[in-house]
Length: 486
Image 1 (cartoon, one colour):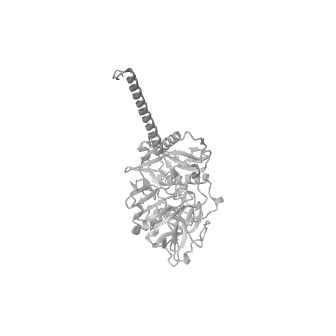
Image 2 (spheres, one colour; image 1 turned 90 degrees about the vertical axis):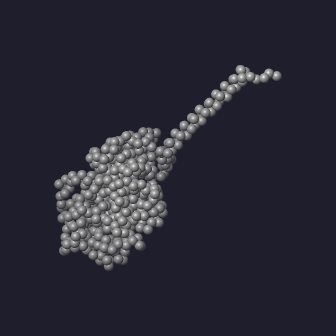
Image 3 (cartoon, one colour; image 1 turned 120 degrees about the horizontal axis):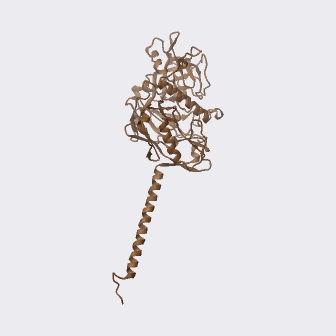
């Protein structure tokens, strides 16, 4: 029998074939591994969503997150099924109207911060009881909370606004005018704890900074007046009353406006809760109890609820990352942020930090759509369009110019978007914070560019959806955490 040797041609062929086989397996493994890595990277940097999730449900689904916190109020979109107002759907503003009103608010903010109010803006109104335009703002995409006022307590649904300071509600007898609200109008004559502020009181003069208007005087009673960017206004008695936030959180002698002449687009709410930085804001008036700390989470859709929480427990989660308050908006109600970059799909966009720092940025609970400097928006839009090129594009929706027809899809993918703020803080937007939909055939990127580089940027409420947003005013910082509500 022949003995095989290393020089056997047959054995050499077998060895060579085996090595080729091993090599091909190895290459296949690398190819599969590379493909898996690419797919994993794709999944890591993309959101996959159901098209049906873009539009709100007709029924309310309350979130329990945040409800365990002691000084916490339920937040609802004023036009959604969770709203205490139960507004007529037929009378709700259209998406076009919401975005037009949003632009009015933005124009007003830009006017206020640029201090370029024209003579027309500053001119007294024809009716001497209506204040001059202050540049204060109200918009249509607002959220409401319910608080108690007076003794006995009357529940009132108020729009809460980080861009306003004075809290006010409509009051009987509505001496001049009241718009239609869902709840009974507050009657100060039926409260045992109501009193007016006199013209000679030092707090009367504080109205100038809180409202942008010099207070008036009527038979020794201090008169406030505030007008908003969309020409809505409230005028009335500057007063103090018992404010009840929760059963254990009650504040005597809370300073507020008792409106006797009110008109505007307040959507059936009884008035406004001011969460700005002025001495008359709720944040400052409750400082001894809450330490000038509050947080909120805005729900993903109008058919869910969020929360507005007061006190230091609001920002204790390790998931909250804080960035310092900037000088943007300083000297006004607004809270400033320093944006240093934006990433899309895991890649940082090529935007100079000076693009953001030139005009600065504020965070605002009442502005719907985030406004970016023109160069920053152009870079974001171009990258988003590239990532979405497999989906059919469609016409613009008001101020939104990057829109898609997803009506033939059941699911789709969008790139994740992250904002970088000073202090090394990176905030991933929730999937709900990237798009704005009128219908499934018109789904748009929820950002817009400012008209010029000198206009302040605004981090709006769509981008804040589902984030825990913590305002530590005493610590001069704002924090962000993920998935704070449904």
